[in-house]
Image (cartoon, rainbow, N blue to C red; front, top):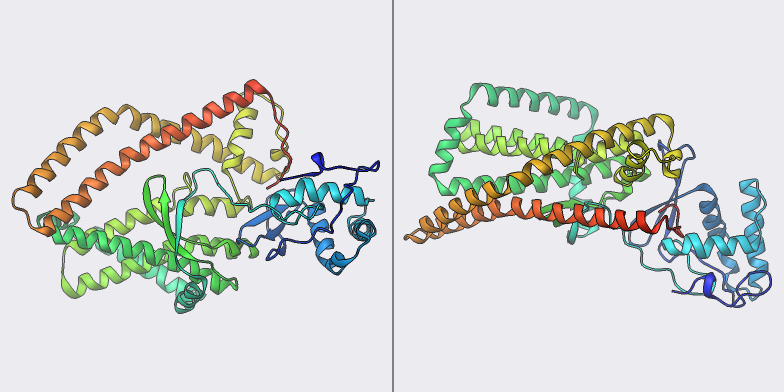
Length: 449
């Protein structure tokens, strides 16, 4: 990709061959990120792939001026057109901007982010987010129109009166089931019947799917359009997802509604299981309720990229907390000067993020260290259980027992693979940080992405 750094330029520093840079086809200027935790409220641009890019106000004004003057794209006098854009930006920003500076901002800032094309006529790159500990190998299952239809079926569940009644019912149901029923006895009955194990796994999957319906429905209730729904791999575990990027158009309350909606729908699912239990008296349904409860607790953890993490993020108005781990650790542990990323934050969000990092990072390191020391024992125990399951399955077992044993073996192996993958990712990150420390700081062409 050619940039102004390697283009032929004239004496003024402007590329000899100029093209009027247009907003990337399909990109949309969203506007201010509401209730943000930044000192200077950032502006959002939605790229053609639905990814949102956060821009400082000046860059957003440049992109907006280019879009407002898009009729100048056909002109032959491109320098004059850029002067017009510069004048518009200067008037709105209250600071003098030249055409050469517009070219610089476009080619060095906006185009690499995929917001606009380059001033030499080159198309912008396809920018794809790769967040730390993000979902991988995503496959869309439901297109947007199907997600929109499903969301419409359930969006009424977010009316305030219905939410209050439902939450009260879920709390009452949980208290009744967990205090008046014997979960241990239900476990025993479940383990004796292989089909019960398969049923609980199936109900767990349905609960996860219904969880995603909640996120989509919350978006539609808030007035924004949810994206596709699908599945992917989180670390090594299969996971479902819903694209709710559009929720960043909402204020803090709307974003938090979208974050909490999945757990809210898990609670509704628990009500359904409780109703089935009252109707049938089938004890394994109590185990299914416990399974869904564990899902809800896991989703509310603020460590990995579960719903709890996004709740924390939206509470303080900071989209990506993980990118502040390095700056905060360097500041607090190595006593380095404050990183510019931290200085961008308001006082309260900066304190919140610091507490989050200094709490979550040691907790993750401790958990990882504890699990790592137990790997030999885990491998030995898992191997014995796998051999036992395989032996039982091979001794004339029915197809149902074979399927159940196979699923149990997979569930035993996945956590070990997850630990190994986390160790690999942590080691790779440490090596990269060590290399950067030895080589010294490297200036990045894009300061805000």
